[in-house]
Length: 269
Image 1 (tube, one colour):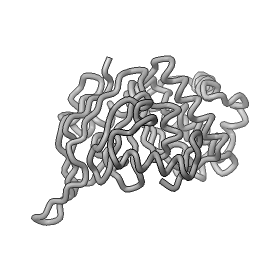
Image 2 (cartoon, one colour):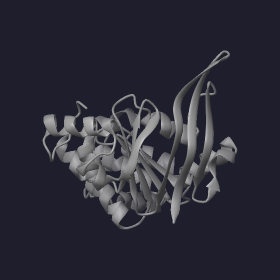
Image 3 (cartoon, rainbow, N blue to C red):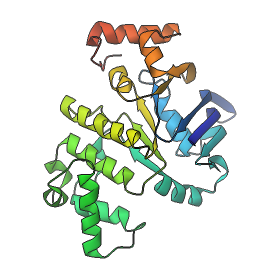
């Protein structure tokens, strides 16, 4: 079943009478249990595409095209309904987990404040549910972790908590925007393994946004390669990693192999 379908998505920036095209006619689809890697170097338009399809851009940006989320015409929804649908059907994992949490609040308070809008549970039931969520992302000492402030936990631990929150309401789609960029190599591996498990169970479709080809190759079934806001290549991930069809794709892969080695990602490309 197709979870997300994007057709001819374009984003323009309006400055008076002038319009600048930032994203041009992007299209792709994601099925439940599949991962699509939206790739390209920094500034290629990956995050702009995500914000455009979710409706998160300021009014000075004009978004056109078609976005169908779980068989619903996303672009036609009212903003209030979009927020409700997004909370229940889309789980989002962002780039820097330390910036995603309130530094002055314990983890349990932050998780409870979010969850209570969607789950009507007693205090005891909520606590047990949070423990199960943490256990689901391989955090065994849940009671201790819930009592901590964000600065007392590693970036990798916070990222796993973000994944737990993202999966809490059993969304149809997970959007992970550079989720491994700000964490160490060991934590990167743990995050990728968690996303692989989610994919293998068919729990959700995954839109994985990254410039890191090594990480993408470990998770994605297919890729869409962006350059200057345009799609320059799309297809199966394994085919792209073996022999990119575009000259830009070849340059990126050669850069990865030259600097990072065949089995290692690089942050320089």
